[in-house]
Each structure stands twice: as C-alpha cells, then as structure tokens.
Image (cartoon, rainbow, N blue to C red; front, side, top):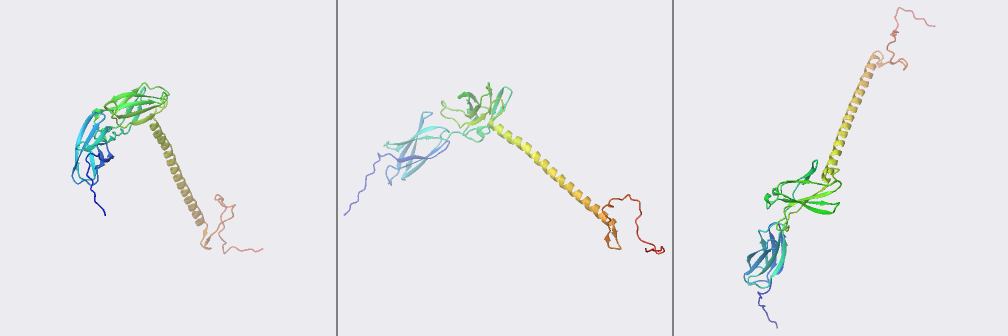
Amino acid sequence: DYVVVKMIPDNRLPPRHLHSVHTGKTFAVIKWESPYDSPDQDMLYAVAVKDLVRKTDKIYKVKSRNSTVEYTIKKLEPGGKYHVIVQLGNMSKESSMKINTVPLSAPDALKIITENDHILLFWKSLALKESNFNESRGYEIHMFDSLMNITAYLGNTTDNFFKVSNLKIGHNYSFSVQARCLYGGQMCGEPATLLYDELGTGKDSSATKSGQATDVAAIVVPVLFLLLVTLGIGFVVLYMRHRRLQNSFTAFANSHYSSRLGSAIFSSGDDLGDEDDEAPMITGFSDDVPMVIA
C-alpha cells in the first residue's frame, strides 16, 4: 500500500542560495532559487539594494515562476559597496549578501620628468578608457617615502600633470595617481604607481631601465654596422687582389708562350723578374753561320 502526499508550499520561507554571478563597474548579476521546488504560479520577489556609501535604498520587483531566478542590478557606481536583500513580496524571511563593484582603472602611462628643483608627474586621461569617469572628478596623488616609511597625500588636480617639490636628497619615493576618492575616501579608483630612485640619479626606475636598454642598443648597433662594413671591404680587397694576381700571371704566361713548342717557357727562379737585363735573347741560328763541333 502507498499514499501520495503533497506538501503545502510555505510562502514564508526565504529564497535559497542567493549569490553573485558577475560583478562589473556599474552592474551586478545575482542569482537565487525559489523557496521551494517547482512553483506552480508566478512568484513576486522584492530585491532591495542598499548603498552603504551613499546611505540610500532602492527596491526592485521581480516576477518569475522558475525555480532559479537571475537578475541584473544596474546603475551602480564603480568602487561602490552594496547590501542586497531578496525576499518574497509578502515580506517573508529574507536572504542577503554584500556586493563590491569593480573600481575605475588606473591611469595609463604615468611618467616622471625631472626639473632643476622639482619633478612633474604626467599621465594619460582616464576618460580615454573609462566612459564612467568625468574629468571634473579629478585625480588624487599620494607619495610614499621608503626611507621614512610614511605615506603622504599630496593633493588632487583635474589636469593630467602634477608638480612635486621639496623632495629630499637620498630618499626613494613611490608616487601613485588614481581617480579621486568620493564620500570620505570610500569610492576610489585603482592607483597607478611609479618608483622614483634617489635624486642623485635624477631618474625613475622605469626610465633608468629604458635608458640602459637604449644605451646598450646605441653601442651595439654601430659596432655591428662597422664590423659588417669592415668585412665587406675586406672581401672586396681580397677579391680585387686575387683578380690582379690572376691577370698578372695570365699576362706573364702569355708573354712566355712559344707557338713552336705549344707551351710557355720559363727560366730558372734566379732570372725571374730580371726584366732590366740588356742581354739579347738568343732566338736561333742562321743557316750561313758554320757550326763548329768540338
């Protein structure tokens, strides 16, 4: 024997397994499951979003019959902190979670230019890659002195450069630039950091590395070029000398060629090169001269 029992749905139960699927700069995707399996009717959920920085609340209504519900919370702020509460529309038990949105990116191409008694920090505008950033918000600059082990707030600016003075000789500094923090320093952008070596060098670490690479390239490239030119000239000289020797030997051999014998006739090594000898060369004998044989 058996009996079929159908449980009565309890609408006082909270949504199950509330969690974040994906979080961006201005949105967050959350997901949860219904209080019980296989709802037989549409269920109305209330999604409350509390801004922990601005101290404001927003409530969204979501209707679904699915066992798993996915919802995207929009119009959030980069670097914000939020408390999300999901419950049925009848104000039953709730499920909650906290969400931190992604902060604004760090400024690109942070560089240091050294002047006589100060330095200048330069960087690219953050608005070039962040559509949610307005230049009127500005940037704030911090400095860390590794020798004193202290961090100082230097100020803020709406420009893409900042002047730093009164640096101490022999100290190493780290400078950071980020989107200006809002609401008591609770909503900040990611910092771009650059190390700066002793003032005696007058260069930051990145500039020193690039300068060293440039110096090495400036030395190696000309040396390699000179070696190639020298080798090329050497090959040309050897080739010309070889051709000259070959032509000289050919001319010498042709001058000593005997058409009667069909070959070249050379004297001994002692006579070679003695071209100034005025003694006539004996070419033969005349028929009218008697030959005496001893």
